[in-house]
Length: 577
Image (cartoon, rainbow, N blue to C red; front, side, top):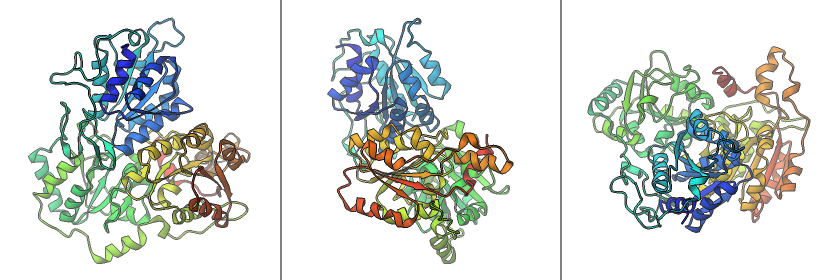
């Protein structure tokens, strides 16, 4: 067996079930080996799309994402998606062929490239260590939630190895047994827990460290802060997505209100004390209540400029407590008066055991306000629909009423992005996929594909601006080819709207960021989609027809939206540039 095929077989044996990529000569054999040993290969039309699909799939499936690309340009094409994954600490393994001859036109410093964007680089060093190198890269991605590039030199790939599936890993870590399949069967709605993965609840497999418990001293300190609090608010981020029960139990004990960062949206759905998303997407009532907190505790949340509105969402006298498994994350973006190194669930459990019950600011009157005012659709606005354009708020609310509740929503970047993020509801934290750590335009459609494959029982909804839609349009063919019953909503203002609203008020020329009309519905039909152009709520009748039908073709909704609404959420973001 050649090394390339052995690596593919070994990774499939570790539990890799789905692989995204574009196949060239350098990754042909490893990809074939993966599929021959049970993995599904999803072919994208561009490596950038493939990287984002793998990222989104990892976020919502609970599995480690896997991307396979050609040497050189295959990796550079994928780089923006890789950067997004690295900044988001997505567990992602990139299988990249590597041209090992310096004079090859395909030769670039792939390891340096990966490290420059925050990924970790590993290499197949020899035929004798290749399988162990691959296993190490996979376990690094899985156990430490890192984006890992596995460079596969062409010369090493083609060499023979004596390793066979089902035998011990040569040169592997002590106690490493045969690579012979996943540890457990389906868990968490179909997720397979791979050998080497950290299991829910903190259990560990094959030498991966269990979720860290907080020190007794830090748990007592946090309990002390909450014991004296009268208006506590908890903010949960990506690192707390699997800790809802534990955080809610602590919130009940402390009388705390609950909020999330954007990437954890939906985590506390159904709680009468759920404020929704904090930061730029916070509704007026949510912002008021977070600002009024005397203690804010963040669980697995970076407290970056978006979540805190550059600090304006947290009062100067508020005590800020930050809980994270990564000590380097503590206080990195915002002051933290108390830091706790520990897993979100484990920390919440430990503090709950130490804390006496307190009502906090939970009252029937506040519960009624939250029920009636916390949702953006309950905030009054003046509908500006007219002149052949629909108000994006009106479009979003109408779609929220039409589309089934069991959905998974992916949102691209741009001036429009707040409308679907704030007005389209999601069923839970697995119903929202937000690949916006790097703020790249054009990732939305690929994100929706990865999310759809991770959550096949839900209606996938891609919310895009016209700029991002045209950047990622090649993957529309992938949606059609895969037979995904996807709804693609394009908020078309015929511009890069963020720049229009950022620079326009200062009198700068805007010719470079405005564009002539494009018939996006016709383009979608050319790819094989059903499509409708919407300029008022009355134009949405075909959406109901599509929903009632077989949904055997994707539906693209070309919303020609009004363009006179400045984006307050992106104005906040621009302040950080």
